[in-house]
Amino acid sequence: QVQLVESGGGLVQAGGSLRLSCAASGTMFRIDPMGWYRQAPGKQRELVATVTRTGRTTYADSVKGRFTIARDNAKNTVSLEMNSLKPEDTAVYSCAAEAHLLNGIRPTWGQGTQVTVSS
Image (cartoon, rainbow, N blue to C red; front, side):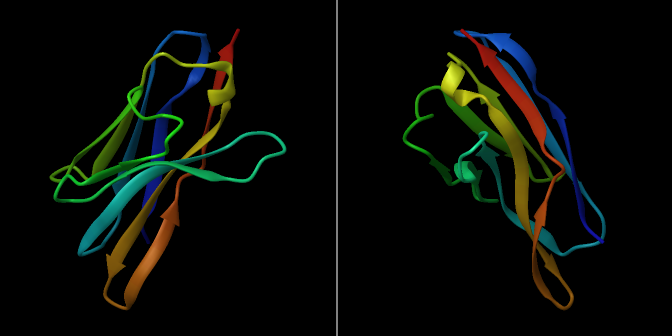
């Protein structure tokens, strides 16, 4: 069984910064890609950023230039550095990844962590 455990998040004023981390554990061949999604109250979940083992990244337009995703392949961890935070960034942020197992690829989600940006 593969698990994703997140840390970080919290309350910050607009313009501030936060860092989210996510660690994968369990038995798997590899975990790829890894990324972050978020869901604000009353809104659909949306992709924030993803990163592959080779370092290829994608970002939502709304976070480009402010957020940076990075991963450590040796440790199976992924982080999201969030700068210049805005109230509209308030959401539950979830780590997500595709775990490559013996019997196939399994989408895996973390439990989510709250990020609240006050104006």
